[in-house]
Image 1 (cartoon, rainbow, N blue to C red):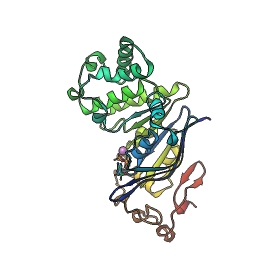
Image 2 (cartoon, rainbow, N blue to C red):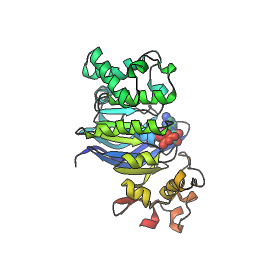
Image 3 (cartoon, protein in one colour):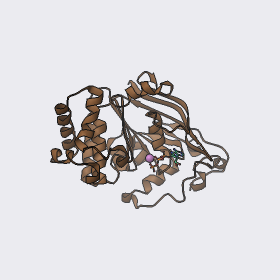
Image 4 (cartoon, rainbow, N blue to C red):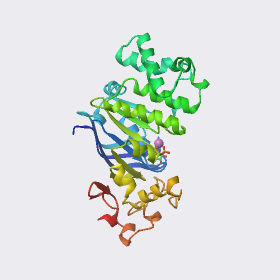
Length: 312
Ligand SMILES: Nc1ncnc2c1ncn2[C@@H]1O[C@H](COP(=O)(O)OP(=O)(O)OP(=O)(O)O)[C@@H](O)[C@H]1O
Ligand code: NI
């Protein structure tokens, strides 16, 4: 298997009045044709990982580690070189669709624009492609929605327009940050089908960030669970979601509606004041004495990796 994206020991710290340790020691690998889902509670660092890969973090972010895409070390590129990779190499569907769309331009133009800018495709042809993508995303009359401005469409529609604009170029690596958030089931299925359908093409992969474990289960080859800036468990969806080893993952699975909606007790720690030892220990129902003092590494257990002293 050729690896398309290889992240080694990624650390992201925001320096300001306070030091925010948003991402710590994250290593992930994504092969061609694969889907990697990044899951975890709000604030655990999922979007920061996505922005670090696309090199779109603000200047206050201090980024350490290694991010290799195809054969390129992304962290060493200058902005001009990075600009060439964004779009057709790496496409990003951002979490906040209203910020990603230009309020002054019609939807059709915005979905078609990447083709014209990156591929020099003509106006008619690019609008034709935009129309087909929108129709696959569940718009029965794409021509009508292409005439709209973002303010004339709902948040859920704008979400799918952003997905369309990021997929028209068929980037090798698509990073989709909460592409199904706030959509109803039928729409979710359309987005899942569109994102999954791209992967049949050679050399493509998807980094999917989602709160929706059922979407992760349906699409992912590998799930990485993040907690307080770290990966705490990684493996196939079957193993991670059916037999979770980390107490936090067990909590996440238990908080699903079909499992009785029991939330993980307590709150995630603030990234400005992370607990010592295992970062989950203050909330952990299974903690051992060593958990308060010693930070656990990722232990390999069969095909799963788990950051828990109980799995030593
Ligand atoms: N520009 C920034 N400056 C300072 N702190 C930041 C900045 N961007 C993100 N953070 C902090 O980094 C941490 C991780 O944020 P991130 O957006 O990656 O979370 P997330 O897992 O994507 O959450 P959500 O599910 O809510 O989208 C949070 O504590 C957040 O407040
Ligand atoms: Ni996020």
